[in-house]
Image 1 (tube, one colour):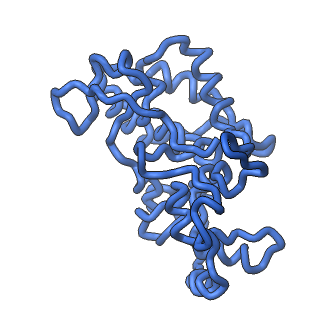
Image 2 (cartoon, rainbow, N blue to C red):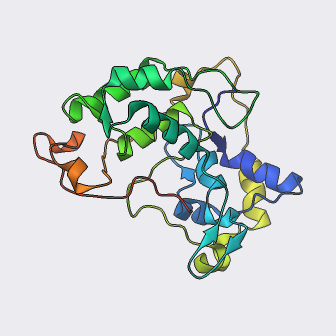
Length: 242
């Protein structure tokens, strides 16, 4: 109902106990995969796109590759890249492009995204940190896209804070015990449908750290926490299992 792209850990485990499909990854493993949001007053939540694309859901794993679920956000980003045709764009241009896009994940959800005041303000802050332009291949824009399309676009963790460890690489503790699952499931509670996203504080995981794909993009741009210093680090855009 609230379309936050998250499901409470209690309901995640409750479904795992009651359904044929076992949602049974341990809390520690979900955290390692970058699929656990621990910032909300609602309690711990599983980030849906991060979980879907995590190594635990890959159908084939080899020594040098994994065959995993498609990243639905790539389709959306490709559309943005084609329409902007530049590495950076103004907030107004981005809002115009994204405001006319629709979700590709379901024919039942074909309405343009609701770009509320919070999303507009965050986009403006990103541009202010980069001289009025938004790098479309930076971590902050990827983070913004996650909140615009929370079921398609994964939350982009800072480099080094999440891994693509397979269950065998993580070890025997990758699976939660039935006792732990029941303990979490017993704490499940429903959120009133009339409560809006702002009341849910659904963007509580937002962080101001920027990471840019290449040094050439980083030149001349500064991250919000750096004041007047120039951002020189180069890093991967998304921490996803692929």
